[in-house]
Amino acid sequence: MLERLQKVLAQAGVASRRQSEVLITQGKVSVNGQKVTELGVKVDPDEDIILVNNKPISLEDKKVYFALNKPAGYISSVKDPQGRPTVLDLFPDVKERIYPVGRLDYETEGLLILTNDGELTNALTHPSHEISKIYSARVQGTPGIGAIKKLTKGVQLEDGITAPARVEIKEVTKGKALMEIEIHEGRNRQVRRMLEAVGHPVVYLKRIQVGPVKLGNLSLGQYRPLSSNELRELKKVLNK
Image 1 (cartoon, rainbow, N blue to C red):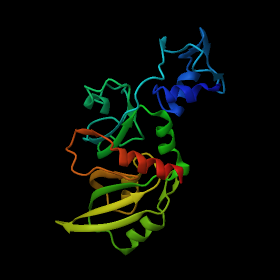
Image 2 (image 1 turned 135 degrees about the vertical axis):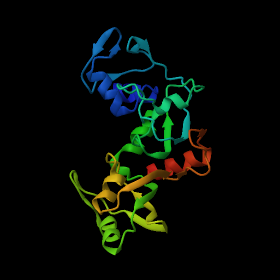
Image 3 (image 1 turned 90 degrees about the vertical axis):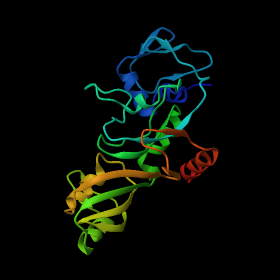
């Protein structure tokens, strides 16, 4: 059965579909000995010999899914040109070639999902699915009615106005407020930029939930497999 090359690469756990497209355009993929650099090429994964960086792909890899409590000081990437530690350094015993679903910025802690399931990654990160992400943020000062209204209506940033967020102030101590904020977008450093834009810069930020998957009491720097129930609920969200 013929399928698009980038889809086959994603199914094989090489990378997400979007990242697979980049590999193709960079000339790092060959089919039956011929380098492929254009998108849209269709292949038969049962018959064609597909190499990525001169190594054959395998569709037999077991799909794995992990929840990580990312510490600050780690890059949410497979590798970093600057040589900084990446989240993959926290998975020394995992044999499968996994990669993060979306990103958490360098200073932010909390829940990050990693997998070798390219199709799920593509679905979870696609804007049309509007997967909710919940953060716990400690900020300078106490947001008043005006700031809360801006956050819940949409904040004007340099890359456009944000979608409405759900906001709740949990407590206020020593001039700093602990907030819970839920968004459905995935812009770079979005929560930090939103809160700074309303006059309350982030002191500490942690993501505590992605869709139906919760961080819970997972220790900082540790990971666990997603449960069958979490995977089932994730797929329900995506099917909607």
